[in-house]
Picture 1 (cartoon, rainbow, N blue to C red):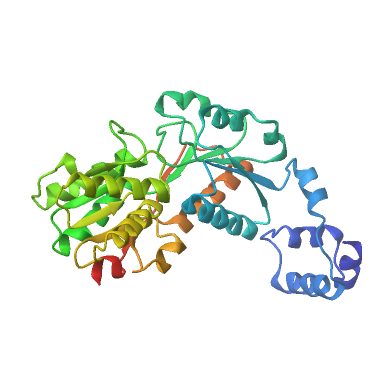
Picture 2 (cartoon, rainbow, N blue to C red; picture 1 turned 90 degrees about the vertical axis):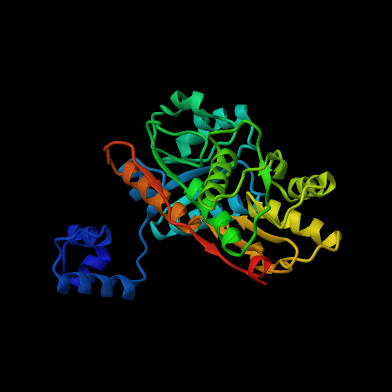
Length: 330
């Protein structure tokens, strides 16, 4: 830094102010310092700077499992968003197990991170007090609402409503669901089922419980099993709404195996718009819930808390849209 100051003919303090993007620097001075930095190949010692600030330069992300495409792509989006802020991401998997989710909140690894983005599946609304932690935490997902933390989530109800409406507007009237959870109200399955029912109601269509294909965890195999069960039941259906893309792809596989044409006989739409959905046969229509926006917003809000922001807890719902492909529109 001293060499840069000498080359630019400024004080070391001025160099520091430029590096830390202090706003009250004259453009000509900033340009001289930046030119000197480039000429000398100066690089900031991030470890030393973070120690001075009392930070590690690393944030945490805890998700259920990276084998689910949505969470893998979310982790990728979070890492890219964090990189633009000059921080790194420590990723942990909880396996959607209650004990492991609780362990993440109290882990010694929290000493290695400046804050945590946390997406629980096993914890629920009754566990909201568990989120009273002594470090910045941003909540992701749909299992808990009204807590003491910033919360970034997708519009599950309106997203599912839009996906179902897409099928209805194409003339589909017997829309099966793959991925329902009996009795669930708060959580992805419960909220997406609510959106599905609202879309039926909007169109004046009856709700038929026989069209609900239940599944536990949302994987390719559970989507295939639910689709097989629906077809074996003999219920008449002309379309399928998979509550995530993995289950919708599993349903597509079963329809192909049974020589049921997609979309002429049965249309299929998923939820999440993961990259894999573009490469199925036919390409899968899906509801894009704004994953990039979730990642960018969560990282930004977490770093604001790390930097000292102490306002009220904020709830952000991302924008969504239907990505129509050949599994519904032929």
